[in-house]
Image (cartoon, rainbow, N blue to C red; front, side, top):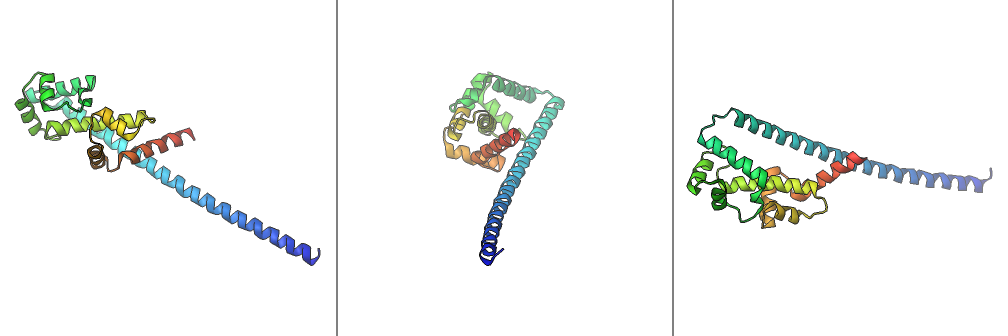
Length: 188
């Protein structure tokens, strides 16, 4: 092998080394992205497990609570709202709930004032609307975040975003990204 062939071979090997280094950097970058996605996926799973635990605890409390008038009224409210979803109407509030359940506004105010979780009817309705918006964000990927919020009963997207962030510790957009990441990981 002469000097010229030797130099060409060295140049070819250096180019190959550069290509391998670039490929290595790409793989490291891809690995970091996958690691972040896995962490996000497990974070969502942890949050879901926490929510499941809260639901189970809530059901246990309801099952073992003495069924005085307050408990019966709350059970009636929960059952009727879950079945018919009137709270998706943004104008549905204290007055409408009282009429819907067949009680007085004062009775509802007193009921929620004594509640350990939701201190007002508006807090309770916002909670239900947030749950419903989470359902729409997850089940309607073609819908925008604003459409999901409006369908769930929120009229002001800024208020929705703030309440969502306060409740879940992430924005609705971040929640959708986590859901999408989970779907992609399941497909792969």
